[in-house]
Length: 374
Image (cartoon, rainbow, N blue to C red):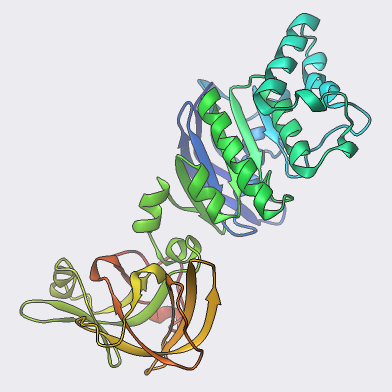
């Protein structure tokens, strides 16, 4: 096992297009780090630079104690699991598992022992004589995992390995990968665009956007304290609601105001108002919005019209529009609710996050880089 450290690592393609901007990232020995972000954010490019499949334009990459910028992929002591499995179709499962070891001229007895160990670990013993075409997608992915495991590398790299699987199989295989990591204790770097995978798999999650690292922290820390509006809006489904408004400080309290909508804020928000921060954006998770029963008492309740209801089994997503035209989504317990009906809501003040208002220089547009958590 080994730690992985990227110091000011960048990737610039011909023509001056920068895919990754001066990335600083340290993956501890035995840690499971997930790189997540939308398509084109630089996460796969970062993984390929670690693997040696992409050259590094500047910066330093270390695996363990060694700088590996110019080290060929085969000499980096890494194993990579790809999205498309990359199995040899003419070989059996057993031959696929053994292939990399044979290329390294590993002794036959050790190959047999490692293949047996990996097959038992992944439940592949009944499949060893089959060809890839005779396997399901989930079985092929387990073989791809096994082929990486038998090498016992210092670092595992995963490039969206579950994207070709159906939803149920993704959940099962995700749990299998997490179990394997805990059992093997190996350093792992996992790339995905699926935020649910990122939140459930990673010891830490690194959120990337347009080649920049936006935030790297434990999953729940990122979810509860996102560094900026991009991170807040990317992690979470449905996404966080954003309402533009202002702070209004009273003698004993501070409120967020957006038209006729007034929401109470935690006591620490008064410090922002005293510092002259008035124009803000309130970020509210859908699960922080509570639909009130008729006659229920709640301070700072507000009314909205139901635009759409999406049932999700035990819960439902309710798309709403306030009297001032603001749109938001609430995730609540499932209940009969008609589209076009009027409801009243309340929001937990402790769950409201305040961000910088959109930059005036950007013409009022959302400035993803400047809109930081306050």
